[in-house]
Image 1 (spheres, rainbow, N blue to C red):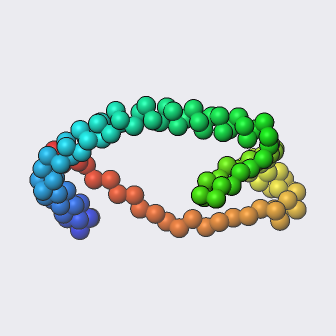
Image 2: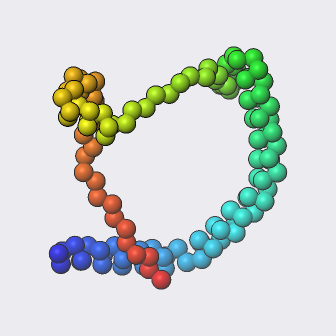
Length: 121
């Protein structure tokens, strides 16, 4: 366990060094992002209006579009999506109906480690 504590401490020290090296860049970045949002917001609203118009036209015509410039609008017909209650079906199979298990697919998910180190103030 002491090896893990050392590794965590090393990460904390590196994060502190990085924070000192960055100086006031994060604050400058925040100001730039705010300025960018102020400029972008009116454009985003207008773009959304055009996208809504495209959606409505596409739904009315029920056709897809592909432009020469790489633009693409894809129409997908309404369809029914089906899902199954895995826990209930496994219970049903355990009750003497194991023939449904032939339709079961399983995927192995490899182990994963999530690391969260407290921020350095």
